[in-house]
Structure formats: C-alpha cells, structure tokens
Length: 482
Image (cartoon, rainbow, N blue to C red; front, side, top):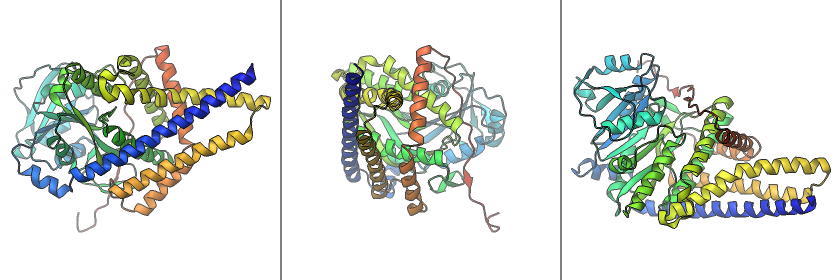
C-alpha cells in the first residue's frame, strides 16, 4: 500500500514539475514577444515626451497616495511626487486620520487651506472631513484629503477616487519613488491603443541599496543585504517575465498597488477597492475585467517593461514573513471570491488561462511542497528514498531556476529596463541570489504561504500593518552644494 502511494506521489510531483517548467517557458517566450512588440510601439523617452507634452489630447492623470502617520518622510515624499514630468496631473494625498504631525506638516509646508469641494461618494470609503489646497501657485497640483480613519490603504485609495475628476488615476504608496518619465511611458500605451485601456502595470523594483537625491533615484543598485537581494530578483522575474508575458495575451492578473494606472470610470463602475480585502489590487482588477466582459465591452491591459517606480521592501525576516502571510491570505481570498472566473472562457484569457495557472501553480504549489517535504522526511526515516532519482529531480529543478535567473538578467540587460550604476556588480549579486534562493529564500516563502492559508481557513482576524521602513540612502552633498 505504501509503495503504491510512494510511486503515485513521485509521478505526481514529477509531472507537476514538468508542467510548471513548461508554463515558465511559455511565459519566457511570451515576454520576449511582448518586448519585441513594445520595442516597435514604445519609442525612447524623448520622443514620447515630444509628442505628449505638446498635445491637447494628452489625458490628465490623478496620482492618489494614501498616508498614515508619515511625519518623518511626508514632505520629502510629496516633494518627490511633485517632480514628476507630465503636462497635466494632480497629486491627491489622502491623510487617513494620522495621529502624528503628518497633517500639520502638510498644512505648514504647502500653505494649505480648506476649500469647498463637491465630493461625490462614487465608491465606498470612510467620510471625508475636508479637502485642502495650497494658496501658493507652486503647489497648485496638490490636493490633500483629510478623512476619518479607515485602517487600510484601500479605504484611503477609494477616498482619493471620490475626489479625483480625471479620466485616469494612478494608485501608489506615499513613500514610493516614481521615475520622472513614468506617466509619459504609461500614457503612451494608452493613447496608442486601438482598444480602451483600463489598466496598466508598471515595472516596480526595490529601492533598497539605491542612492536617492532630491526625491529621485540617481544610482540604481541591487541591495547588499541577502533578503532584499532575493526580493529584487523576485521582482524582476515578476514584472519582466510573468506580467509582461501575460500582458501579451491581454491576461494580466494583477496591477500592483504600489504603482498602477486605471481608467477611473471603469474602476468606479466596478466598485473601486474593497476595503476589507487583503489583496485589494488583484480583487479590483478582476472585478473590472468581470464588468467589461459581462457588459460586452472590449478592453486592453498592458505592462510597461522599463522601471517606473521604486519601493522599499522588507529587510528583516519578521517584516518579510508578516508581508507574505498577508499576501498568502490575499491569494486564498482571491481564489475563494472569484472562483466563478476560473476555467471560464466567458471571462476571456484571464478566466481561461491566467487564473487556472494562478490556482494550479501558485496556490497549490506551496501545499504540494509542504506535503512533499513531510513525505521525504518519512521516507528518510524508513530508508525508502531512491537517492539517485531524488538528486536528478532536485538537480533538474535547481538548474531550471538558474536558467530563469540568467534569462531575466539577460532580458534586463537587453531591454535596459534598469540603468544599474554598476551593472557587473549588480548582476553578480542577482546571480548570487539565484544560486542561494532555493536553499534559503524559497523555503521561507513556502512556509509563509502555508501559514497564511491556514490562518485564512481558521478565520483568524486579518490585521494589516505597514512595513517598518529603514529609509533609502541619500547622496551626501559636497561643500560647494551646501
């Protein structure tokens, strides 16, 4: 009996691994196809800026950035947002009832006064107490919303949607560092699309290890610490292979809450962000897709392959595991709440291909790995391991993971997605991360996924806590610059 179970499980793992590798190779191929198409349709930054800057048809954009207890960095963060290069945009800072001096600093620094504002509660959010604008013309693009405490970013984002009046909005974190040309790169895809563009995902990497000056990343570098180094490689794979590959068939499963652009009208008609969700970015995009398919409207989703935004990732094991517990719960929540889309061709390639992939290869994989680990321990104890087969399978998986790392590094180098300050050192760090990832980082993520699933099944209270930031490096000014 046990021998039969052993062979069944062994073949199951073997064929599952082959299918997983085949799916990765498919995404690699599709990401290259998408990059080739974009290389034709996406010109250099100067050309994009030349055409969009002088056109009266360039769409206006609202940048929504919720903030809670950000007194240490709020002024630097807002100043950074104001440096974005785009002809027609507004910045909406949503103060989620901060208990520190965040609101006081904003009022004093930008000479804010309360203004009458016709607020339409288009989507669900806690009540807005007041809207403030600056009396200084230099800060005319800035709008500050003061609202009752919602407890989660989604509620603050919804308040921003209720205030914004532009055709498109970008949702970001107040401490993200946005590339000056980011909006140009995204909006070029909008104005050149033959179908209505309802969402754009932008490549976002970690700012850990980078040098920042006046709110801009002036020296991009892979972090020196091991955990952030693993995450940088993970981010590159996610944006340059997975998301870019899925965008090729209009099947993008997620637009990151750190920096993503949406059609305001479609987002509102879909209900905006769900303040109770642990995966509000995925949830809203899927509801937008559901709305478009149910109403018979054509649409497009896209991925920008060049860096548009930098965010500080968790650098401690405690912060990382807390984040990944939340992500795992969010994935389980998406599987549960949007199950009608899975394997349903009515919802297009997202329902037919992307969500089944998400379920089979991202949701099930951590559980299968945990079962496999327990089974392996049991086999070792009873002396039932076929070590030759085990080493061959592990070697195949390990070499494949190295191949994926080599490909994403080549992809980054070929497309100039990121201009690393010291490219040789940065790529060497990424390769080091790739060599160590299966032994250190991947087991941590597998553990976090299973714990997150178990907490969701038990119905444990979901608590969202922001990551404790260490801050980015700032280049020291010379004596002549002081």
